[in-house]
Image 1 (tube, rainbow, N blue to C red):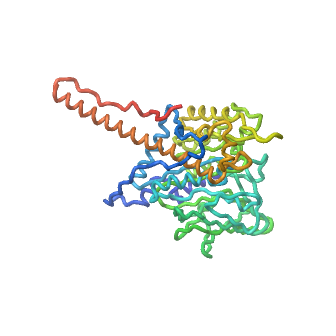
Image 2: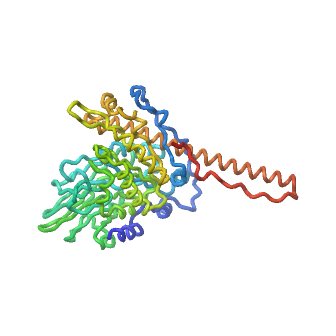
Image 3: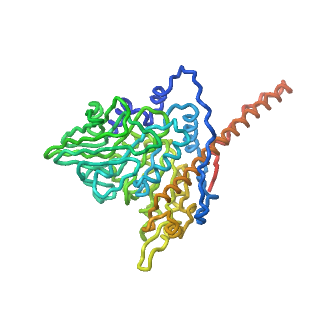
Length: 476
């Protein structure tokens, strides 16, 4: 059902979410002769790990599959947007509690946006975690509900309500409810001009958006299939209230909030559920439809910690589940680039204390197999952060929490900085290699022309071909 709405809304109302031509027309006058200022070269984030000798920055690279054409295409698009100031890049980060907490993905988001602060796109898809009891919310936006709503998550055996990509649904039932949303990010301006609520109501409850006391109703065309509610605002805002006017016997299930605008640049949506495994996302009925709505150019996957935590971990089953998830992603965008985060080291608890989980190295190998099969890339967090036994060292160093699974804020920020350096390094290498190939082609053409002038009767040579389209910057 939502697939029809996704297509309808994408054409009619969503701007800045994967609609390249629309954003191009909205952001830059094609007749303008204004020159884009030359941007400084990208530089890696400075990271001091002297106090953490178990972390090896010398191997902090993005390991790319032999066929790197998909990731190269993403880098090409990123480079074009950086040079022209037109278009959008959409990144979707899917994960578990490491992502729900927000500190890892938001640090990556800000690091990438810091390179091009004039190319901050929309905030993307967010989840109203704190509208339900006992849920932590990312610190970069706040969620306050009039009362705690009913919750369904994709980690449940049989979720009570359908859900989409967010893997999370909050439901108001039998009484009105309000949810106040406020963006707390002060470094970057994620001004929103369109709010899209993903949700359903079997009793035809129509949500309302309030901004500064003024009420807005959803675009009628967007709700005819009862799945998406799009609200256009007259000016940008970073805070608003969702009103769910349920009466006795009525209900509305909210599955996600998409914050959009018409700004060119990078949009980074992060989706995480505490305790989620790869198979948890198979319970999300609208997974493919929501992915289609976001139209990701790049998906970062931080899933696997919960799959590999127990003693019954089966790497074959784990890989099979991941393949099913990736097939869903690629069904939406066959050219979507994919980067896998390996599991970091974590510990199990025994009566004698904590011991390093032996499944870490086994799961690590699966990620490399997946990257090779799907022409993706791996950021080897397990090895970079010290491998087996590193978690105890991270706890002692203040980088990980006492549960020996999760990180502290400092730990997540460090991991994010390390990932960004590996990712940007791969982008820089790609750009340099493209330049070298182009220069070599020009040189070959010039040499060919010189030889033809010297030997006018010689049979004309064919133009040189680029045999390096699948080049591999760093192989494993």
